[in-house]
Length: 145
Ligand SMILES: [Zn+2]
Image (tube, rainbow, N blue to C red; front, side, top):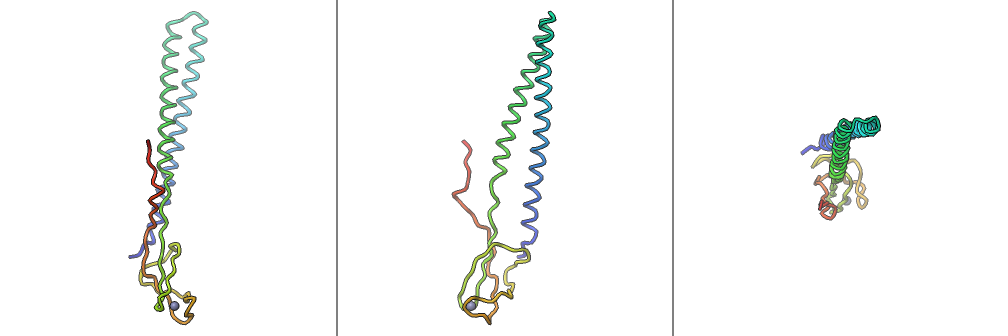
């Protein structure tokens, strides 16, 4: 019933998601810069007199610009989904006298572990971890329309 590695894995996966999103944003920015350059060259070629080349370049620029905006929008949606908070893991500590305390999960907690921290009512008896569970907040569920 040890849950030591659970929280570690969660933090690792969220940082990996962040890396992917920054990577994607970089690509989008490069595509956007290329699109703007293509549009600028298109304007220049139009004034030079080559209207066909200008049209083709403008078309490429616009498509690239639309694509980058679309990707940016998509990545924003994804990052919003990733942001959903990881529910807290709680540890329930019980004493033989019936005293019950709930605190956040700490590294090294496991069910039936005896704690050195005495109960508030009876300082001589040792407390024991009776449950480790994940706190689920139903209200915080997000629905994308
Ligand atoms: Zn007690």
